[in-house]
Length: 436
Image 1: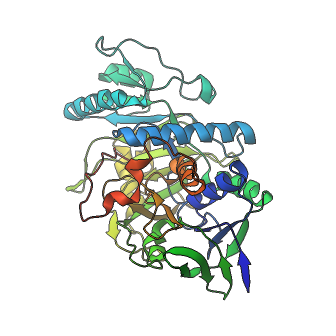
Image 2 (image 1 turned 135 degrees about the vertical axis):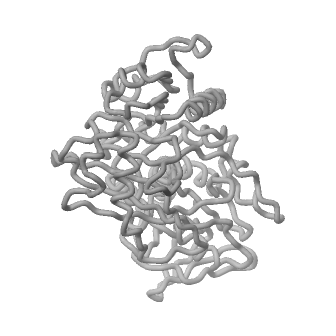
């Protein structure tokens, strides 16, 4: 059986769904086929923190995220906030004097890249009052971040933090959302505008000379098309191998998360996403910084919490499915988080009944920037390498890839994300990625 499409998108995770929405709903492309062997949004999109931030120590990423978050805010307004966008911010917490200095210096540098003004009690930063963490709608929040220096200032503002907290940075254009609800809303709108979903697998790409002419599916179906977008998440390398001479400079990192009912109130329900900036030690073992937690509200009144920590992050060229998680992860994550927010010590390293550990593979590039743009095969494009920021960046990435496909001028920072930057054997300098 043969059908026709103007564009085929390989992958129905957040990047693929957002691209389908951008093309069909906003750009008016009539025939878009979205192909995935799994149900949409089930491989990686529902496995992470589901958070967003514009605060990146890399100017290109700041520009991408500013554009993407603006799109998310527009979608929230249009949908009646159907996906629960919560602009409560990120709270980076430094406990040692050295970490406090590093946090301040990094904040000054990131602010200078365009992420917004830095406010604090230090006269060199300029005075500025903060809004309450969960008070106002997104459009009334200040941009930038608020720096609290000194134990008294930190503990007065955030009473739930450890008594030795030396500094805290509250990033304001940040928060979280329900990624699955967002994806379903986008997909519903896209399908209402003609997008066809194929629960199938792309197993071959047909070429006419040097350009894409169609794709073959595992079911035997053939879709004739002049354009193919690879948005396959952690399966990107496998998908790219279907194109002659195309290799993706990506690796897969397995990240774990713990979800449980916070029946003992370890984390206030109105707290920001809390991130520890100090390396930790558990049972004499040195472990990296980055343990983090946030409240999780699914509308049923249960006080859930997510805890994440990539102390055991496994890196591989191809994902091993289904993933296997460290059986100690729940205990280790709770013990690590208890050093930043002492309330977690109430669980003594053991989560309550019903707690779950899951996670997924983040697809990352050597410079920690995404791959967005045309591939050497004419008519082939990639929207991938979004590991660690797939949910927050997908609307911005979708806008860029759609501009490439439709021939419109993409944003000025698009060249920095073009996959061609890895050709010629020279690996770009790794851009700073921050704690998360």
